[in-house]
Picture 1: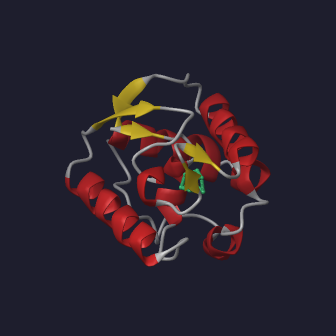
Picture 2: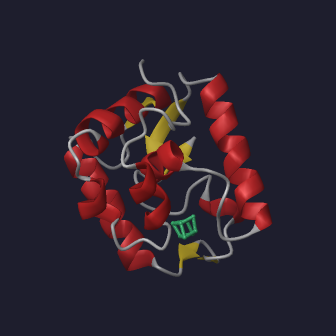
Picture 3: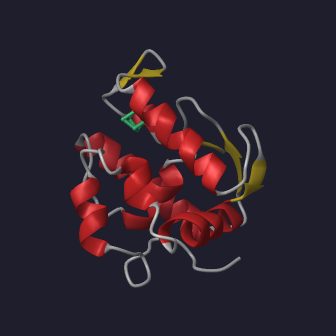
Length: 136
Ligand code: SF4
């Protein structure tokens, strides 16, 4: 499964809100699938991914906020010491996002200008709200 690196953060705080009903239904299904099968291999991709597939901001395969989301992706890769194209289990990736970004308080410095930031800021950390497994 191809996954934009910054979606590893979105998944941890997701609560059913999004750009359209179709988008949120689809994103919820992906999260439930990964919760059930955390060993799924994800290929970290700085481009439209499985989540973008049903997004109204995906215009012919390119995000309308490309510069912003590419910046988020690159920051997540750097913070987790990963590289674009790397393939790891979703459980391992989720754990790295948690330990290297969220627990270190770096989330807002990466995506604090996102329109959904208020959701993640409210939760502060994902210890009790997380949608994904806490360990590998
Ligand atoms: S806003 Fe852009 S990066 Fe986010 S899901 Fe939509 S197309 Fe993908």
